[in-house]
Length: 497
Image 1 (tube, one colour):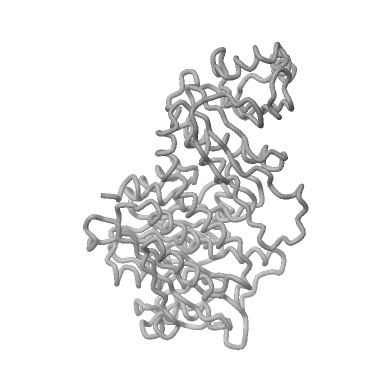
Image 2 (image 1 turned 90 degrees about the vertical axis):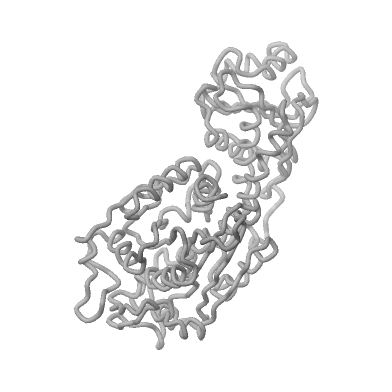
């Protein structure tokens, strides 16, 4: 989708969208059109009971007294309550409503909304951001789409009195959307295409943005002692990989980085502890954490973030075969700690164990945040409304929650504690990879904490957030890109020079 900004003028032809707040003087542009139509638009407003309330949409095809092909009004509610996130939802509505309308372009008029707490340029930029995010499509494997099934809308022109400021504000948002789209693409790909080696190849594309990318082979990981990660992938014909992405954007290029670690299980059958057949096809997105870390690194590099950041992703495929890891096996992690594998379907934490240890040993980061589609138990607790946040660090928790609220990628802090930690003690090894039936998300987090020393650390369980089967305000069905916006905001607000 091509998003542009122009000076605020009423178009004479084509499609026109207007943001309308509830209130008598909410839209000067609409008032002009009402006069021009000699009462036709006013009658349509009354007939539809359109008041500008939040979420209301009124479409008028070929409005009388004008040469417009259509007029679409989008209610935003009280101007005094406007927030950037709400405006993005309106942008998403515009893209969704007009996507297959037959219109190739729409002009969006952004008037100064009465009593708005945010400026017109901010409104314009976030309308464009929401529309851009919603316009995403993953249809590369659809070969028989009819013209009516394809989007017709390719351009949105946002008309505002301060187009220059709107362009400036939109630029970093557009760059962030590139990271979101990169993540959505990765999460959406089928596992026969996006195996560990292919995933590693795709992150190499970030070199074009100035990101240093290194890929570790199985031999290199074996030399480093990564028995936990390698044990997960030993049943697959696909070689396991670890990809390391470095962005050095701080004025002090040698300063310790912030670090992000992602679980990248490109397909998870459950291994010998095999999953039920129903729904197993969805396990192509069990690499959502690694996808989010990759998209974040793209976003940081694209907007030239003034920070040193490293992304580390463990890439494996968990398959059952004659060489697969068995329940009851004991593996030795890079840390030297031994793990009794009770359930081979609790594999993501084994991947993260070595990735976390490697990251802190090599980079001595300021903070470490891991992301993983780790447990079904987090869905039982939080559904698809919040990502689960686990950390012993109150300050880091507050920053993450605030960043999530600002970007609409919400987190809910979950408990950690000694009682949970004891649940993963093993009779024959240093620990086992699962606890009992209850508290599964927390015992998984406790497992990870055993591979973190004194580095401020947080674990984000995003099993309910990486994919959606429903159309969301700025997210089509499929891979969501969850985590990119959240962590990009965290870096921008708290860790840049």
